[in-house]
Length: 438
Image (cartoon, rainbow, N blue to C red):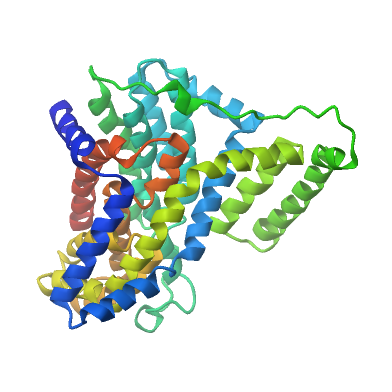
């Protein structure tokens, strides 16, 4: 494992550009492929790209909020103490890396936005608590757990086909999560990966002699609690009023009670953001404390603001031109009943590089792969989960989802991509075998 890991780490650190350049290269590649493989003209493709730039603005705002509310919550004294206590459990660099990937994977299976934030924050705390740990590998471990998110209980594709009115309902009807997320084969596959990722990182981390420890300046914490000012103006009293924060927090708790208990709601991205927001408001106690925590957290959102519109443009080219459909149909053309889930998975992984959104990918592949699978006798539930696994798999080499985590960790994509490539190879083998034989 050491030579393989070192090879990919060297490649990433020496040749991989900033994540922004990755988005630019994918933009030009999607444009050229669409120009060659579809009947669309050059101006038409530019128009599709321009129109698509604004197609994921709402999602970009959600990702910004998951970043800033999660980071602000972690900077509160109670949560910081909890993470610090957890980070104090491992007694060696290897154990610290194994802990981070295990916790991040479980958190991602529960809710993907939660997993991204938890992985990054725990990696920071372990870096402070464990001497000699390689910070790039530690942050990569925090991101690697994300590979199981689409097989978990927040998976957008299995939740979509379990909801009335989904895009292939006329073909499949409503497909319950018992046949997708909680199908025995999917649970075995997801939890096998969760339980073995720490072992994979053990072999990557043991005997590592060139560990790059974290720059202490990257882990400097903002002041958590701001001492009440000596001024006693009406404005400063409001800014330091614990009562105001507690009242707003109480409103949030009442809403969550109504949502989860009375209305039997489920976790989704908006609810996770809401929970982070309310808990942060409560735990920071004073309004001005929370304002300062948010102001500090927002500094890391530049990558999201810059790059997410570019991925919207790429998605506009891929979907509107029909290029994504051409890729999906090519994999279908040589599939059999036994191999169809596997090749659907590969197609999903390839398309995900250009359309790194589970919902966007489902719009592209669902109407194509579901009928094709039905014609071959493959259940819709397995086809849907094959797309979902493909979408999650190549996230390991797609910077799109890593941006919030990297912003919290204060690293670049080249610092983690070498390790994530090893995770991509390992999980690709495991998932392929699972889709063929489970």
